[in-house]
Length: 297
Image (cartoon, rainbow, N blue to C red; front, side, top):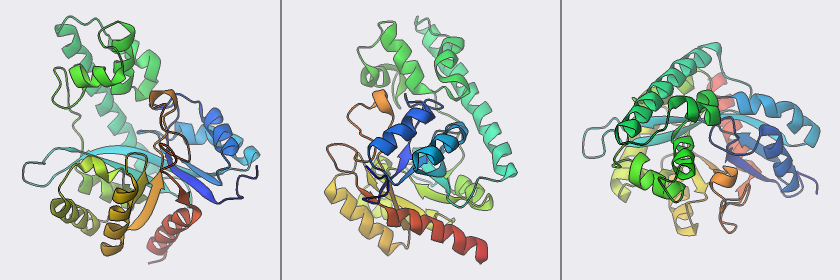
């Protein structure tokens, strides 16, 4: 199948350089098999997967987009203050700046500190999991999914979902929050680096409609460019809602499956859950245009 024949793309996918299970080369091959015209690798806090995939993508005829997923928090006053907000940053017309790479290195150091505190908290509950074990699985980008797999392997949880519910998720017994920057701060960092900031899976903001709109409006005023209106966790009604919201707030639409491989076996690259993800190539063109407009302004 010609990768460009149907014009479908996926702007949200992970490799084993963060919390996915496929290598960058395997992910590119899967994108080719799925007939995707373009693929964005959006690993957490690293561009290593993207860099490793550049050669294979060129050989496979798959257009590769530079992206990254960053963890931030709500900074507004009120009951939702401090809640996690995931931000996708795209560099659709080239790679990030050196200043952004330096900022990212600091964020990785903070992630490792959180992991160390999480391992200590588990140990205090009698669960023998060490930071070294976690990093053997996730390397420098180890995170809670790697803790979850260890908990399953050691018999402390039946599956990853239970591991998060009992030990790792917000409100669970061993949860340790990262000292994340606010979404407004990170939006500014991404814009300064020449990137396009997009709110990922807005369903996870878990807000009523009006507070959700007010929050996104505040982020747009802080420099937010796009909204992930298509995502595996967002069915047709939610996709329609977020499409309308993006139009009202003048945000560029984006979309992707949030593919992780075996970690999320029901989520398929390019098509999501039971085909609920179909992202047109025009979304990538919109991101590129938004990036070009900023550079030329």
